[in-house]
Amino acid sequence: MNRRDFVKTGAALLLASGAGSFKNVFAQDEPIRIGLMAPLTGVVASGGREIMDGFHLWWKENGSEVAGRKIEIFEEDDASNPDTALQKARRLIQQRKVHMLVGNLLANTGLAVASFVKTTGTPYFIPVIAADDLTQRQRIPNVIRVAGYSASQMPRPLADYALKQNFKTAVTISQDYTFGHEQCGGFCQTFTEGGGKILDQLWHPINTADYSPYLSKIMTIKPDVVYSVQTGADGTRVVQQWSNFGLKGKIPFYVAQNVADQSVIRTMGPEVEGLISPAQFCEGRQDPANKKFVETYEKAFNKFPSLYAFTHYTGAMWITEAIKKVNGNVQDTDAFLKAVREVELVDSPLGKKVTLDAYGNPIYDVYIRKVVKRPDGKYWNEVITTYPSVSQFWKYDPEEYMKQPAYSREFQGYDKTKS
Image (cartoon, rainbow, N blue to C red; front, top):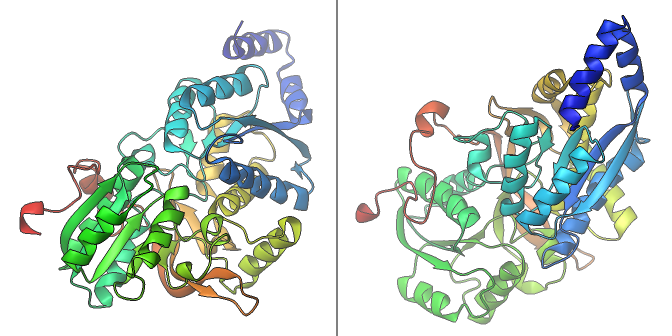
């Protein structure tokens, strides 16, 4: 008998015996079980470990208990593989009987799990998975991006900032897959609608070793600004080769937040100084809530937090507030998901005020950041300017916006014949 049949049968027996209230008492005495998935082996294992560290740090600080119910966390390694992620999600739901799933890092694993929970109704919270359509055209009501962002959301304010620096022309260089397509699409559409011109878009395979052909072309084109989207080791290589090629200081280099993230820059040197990126997190932001989080994380792990740690720490904070709203009754999935959507975080590490839109994606301040060298010799991001209350739909009407195609290599939000 599967879990859903068991629950239905159990409920019927309890009602028949007049013991319906006993069910709620029993449920409230159980621990709240959370399934936490991340890649703990493979090429992005370091980011997966920081997902775990950030999530656990919140619960360690707050007693692993909410509304009188203990919190139990079951970890699973998705190995950066969608088939493995699906298998682990099934195990967590069917065997561990978790009340919710959290995590995953790569889009392919997140999409696999999202497709599965669409059939189970299990709440699934994705602080890192950024695929636009999970909270747009293919929205699943029980999949919510607490503390995360849609891929095209961050580069829009960055493009606006570039226009305000009087940059008229741009080139993008990106990994050739969905995350890169969507990030570049958000940048290009905003930049061209503001009067800018995209001179070229350079796409390369994931795990490219030599960027010299692309950098040579950029030197020939001579744009006002370059926007680069990379993840993992590609981010490190692009930044190093940009500097080695002599481009640093000659052409402004704007990057996706992943490239300027602590997971990349903490192992690098002067080549990272001056990188400009957009993000909902800035480790050098000096408001009390952010400072406390950064100092707590640094004390616990002897390093500044990355995007992966930050989103899962604040994701745990968001989930906690929702559990309080339903007085611990997470078994009532509809009520719990409603509570999640209604959470407003005020003066948290996520900013002054953060809410979810009607599609399950956060609306919050986006910081345009610059990597600077601290007096102690370490590098971190500091805020240049703030764009308040940025939606995944930017300044567009959501329903009208979603009539346009999803971003792809072919569709980047502008007429290429006129750019």
